[in-house]
Length: 380
Length: 257
Ligand SMILES: [Fe+2]
Ligand SMILES: [Fe+2]
Image 1: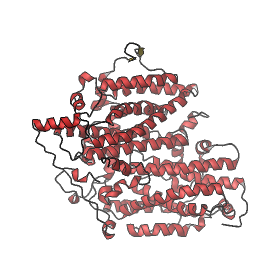
Image 2: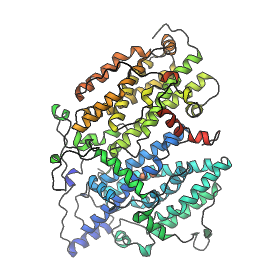
Image 3: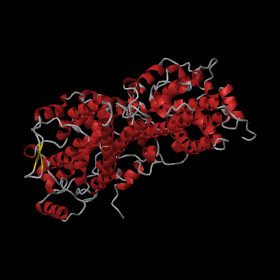
């Protein structure tokens, strides 16, 4: 992992006015900031928070859709859903790698997710009750993700921008696939159409909330715009999403659950009703219908992987170097960990074998994780 | 495989359904892990393998439907048969257990399928040979991936070794069934379509043996292997798997998805 040396790297910089002005000049000139470039601590922190949050969303997002893999209605749908959920896992892996270039490890980020310190997209705290929810998520949630992410392809931080170019291609495929599920249902039997309408009714408002608080209430927006991490405000992106999505829903004969939704000729876009921000904050703060289950599922999965002290000896027998040690930020060396607690025995790949094993799972796929990691490098 | 005698459509269908059910049921089991794997890399690897298995199942069901000639498509065969009509091996339906158990089951099944697919690549049945050519590449990856885990866990920590040994113990009764021979398997063997499973044991042992040696695992002999899957006699877990698998097709019969 090329980012290895960066984990826990010294990141102190003296941030005098000249430094900040020089940095801003680079950003204003649309230069890409790369991992080893000097950057203000605030810039680094903002990116770590945002990329981490984004990565967690991909990972937690696997759960509501994974909920329907074993019940998908046909073999074709089953295979497509499996592949889609796997893609989201790939996005997560890819984004964790991008965040690692900023000196934070995947393990640290995961700890923050499990402790509740790091957030993820609130939409995944709603349950998937019917098959139509799989269509609605693809169409609306991946659709909203694209709106958010297309501008991020021009983000000032190079690794994040390059990651987004790749991710966006897959998200737009997911969006079309989800819409196609909705279309099939909307053109199916009355029961299927009702299922599609019900899914739209439940997912529409949470999808609008995906863009975050209104511009006036967003605490991170201004500085992020200045640093060209963000290119559009939350409200601008939300409006774009509404304008793109409403005609799609109407085309397949579905109705949006908003009596105030109507085309406004003067401004050339849709007007829509007020968002229930109480619900938004309630879910963000952990009180959505599925928050506890989502974190519990991730905790259980992680429990199995954490805390193994020894590596398989083959790597040394073969004369291959044992896994290159990560530079852990925490002070205690991992090899001297006490015996793992019960239920946590799997040697994490990065300690269990060559570093390459971390990516072995995808080595067959040209667009797999190894491809993803390579993609983070600056071109040339 | 030369000097073939022709095989009846019924025998061919029965043979194809066995293979198809093995792949669907095991692929389904593997897909139960999606989103819950012990590490992110495995959340990519296990769906990869599940996708291979389900893809192979689809090709086999499509062919079985045609061989049967009753107009059943892949979904009718996969979703709307009764429990006693599924003819997968018992190993495929075994519950996932822990990660060690899942990986060992995968390894065993792949070690059984690799020599089978390799032989089918020169089958007298061109359609099946085509399916085998693709599947053989995929199963080689399954052997490598699952085999690496058998070694890593078998020769890992005290806890991982304990779990891998428990998996060897738990799956031992389901190995012999893979190599059973009966009138269906003999008919397709005589027609040069696929080798009789009873001839595949040495190849299986040649794959499993070195991995066990490296993992420091001992082979466990069981006096009485479990059998019955090929006749539709299954364990109790399969009914629940099917209840989930068939839920949509049963609740909303005859619709297009
Ligand atoms: Fe994604
Ligand atoms: Fe997606």
